[in-house]
Image 1: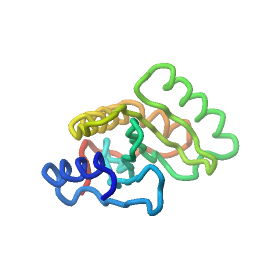
Image 2: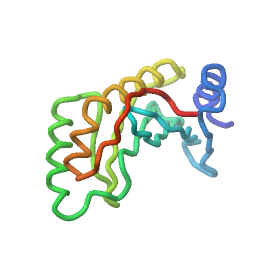
Image 3: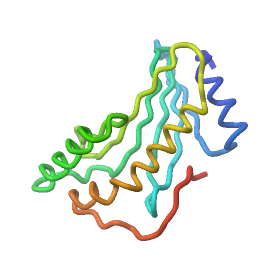
Image 4: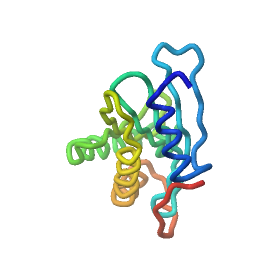
Length: 155
């Protein structure tokens, strides 16, 4: 692996949660980008997420809240809810992408040394955040909320 930070994170997750992540190196990428795929569970909802590690000083954590659901009359309500959340929670960015999918991002600064525990702590914060705000986002989008407790990275 050409990316030393990605290699360090891979070793970290193998020691912590072997098999919890899929790893994908982006070929011929100038920043030696490596994607770590997994799913997290908040409440009774499983969300796919990606941790992006490259040669820049940034590590991005991206959670897909729901795919291509924000259309028509629901768009304004979803954007209003996400704007409210963006003003309330400084650690996260909520947005609707060009395809209408609802996304939650967090960005960490890691200039040189990979700190896997910092990524895990942020993922925990994202899970807890979704426990508290997920229902409001789904309600704005007109999506039924599944029932049941739980908070975990899904293997």
